[in-house]
Length: 119
Image 1 (cartoon, rainbow, N blue to C red):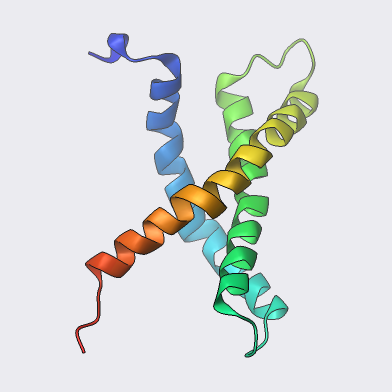
Image 2 (image 1 turned 90 degrees about the horizontal axis):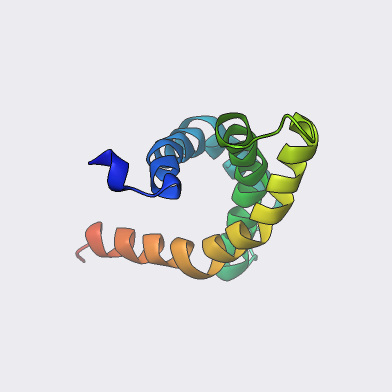
């Protein structure tokens, strides 16, 4: 059955769990720490969300690009670092837009719906 999947779908089967593990166990505390350093009690919630999303992408995008370069890219011709930097630069605009405009709001809505506080 796996032979019917596209190469990108097979890559997603590897990269999605890697992304979840990295975000939850490696970068979560760093993102919270950096966000707390940038906000004040008067900071609007929307700005806090944007700061946190941006910091997450700034940490996750280069890391995930590094892993994808090592696992899936043909970097012998140009070299590993050049291929990794190119991958990160290409991925960053999509990652920031995806996080701020689509995935972030969808996940926040989902969690608000699932874990609704009954008053």
